[in-house]
Amino acid sequence: MAFSFTNSKDRTYYLHRKDTTLKNGRTQTIYFFAKEIKDGALDAVPDGYMVSESRNGLPVLKKAA
Image 1: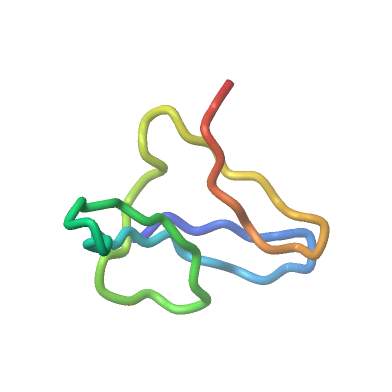
Image 2: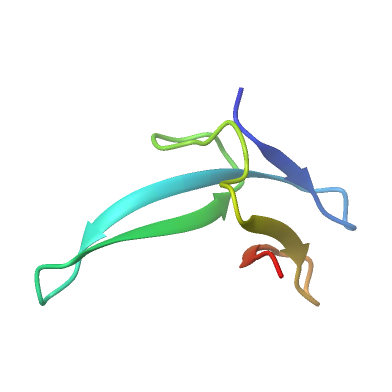
């Protein structure tokens, strides 16, 4: 089951992960939230991260302090 986050506006978002290759050839992992479950959905928040909500209600993944 994909990790879900329901914001203050009662909308549910699902956490996803995607590995992309940058122009210099380096690979970088991108975490993002989507309204639907797609390929790359995660079951839990990665270690060292936490979910926060922005002013406009969108969930954001931040590094834990």
